[in-house]
Image 1 (cartoon, rainbow, N blue to C red):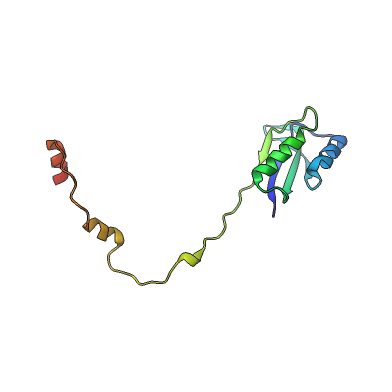
Image 2 (tube, one colour):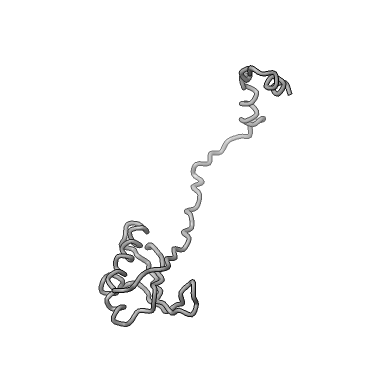
Length: 129
């Protein structure tokens, strides 16, 4: 599984510009026509990536952004990265044991040392309450 993300370009690209990007490293990317997220009336090109070659998502995105610069007057106003699910919890850390009466918190509170005396009457009254 690679690093998945999408770039929204500032405009719709031509076939020649698409060829330049594919030759520059976007050969496995998917090019689709979409609309600008901030203005549905503006047609743009969206490029979907599933980069298995990069060692990190950040490296994959940086590489894609650098490649877009090969086409003059083209920018990237949008980046989408889908949420990545967390790995399931490792249950091997759970050990079987027995229930002990009284919680560790209760036992710890019984062993508390008395608080230091404060120098004011107001603090002393608060300690007694």
